[in-house]
Image 1 (tube, rainbow, N blue to C red):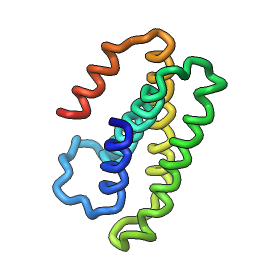
Image 2 (cartoon, one colour):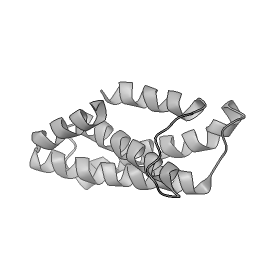
Image 3 (cartoon, one colour):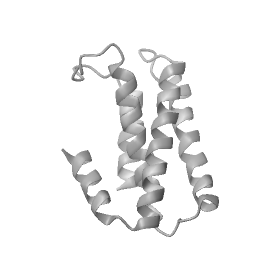
Length: 124
């Protein structure tokens, strides 16, 4: 699931997005960035269920964080209609951080119900 989600996120990052539902705020895009990367951080860390210590969590966090930064830096290079935005980059980082923290505690507490609910949320 983590790999499929990552590939979908790559595709969405590099294509033109039209008709995305508005949430009614002036920072809808930032909310979408944050939520997308919460999912990414959560799914990758829960994929590796054996990671229960902060020492082992940090390398995965840094890889996913680097991925989020790289996607924001590359999007305007690959698609001329997309632009780099520092606040989007920070939203990606915030999302990865939140997703990693949630997943870390799910792994420690073995909260499988949260994983199931998260997957249902992604599917819907």
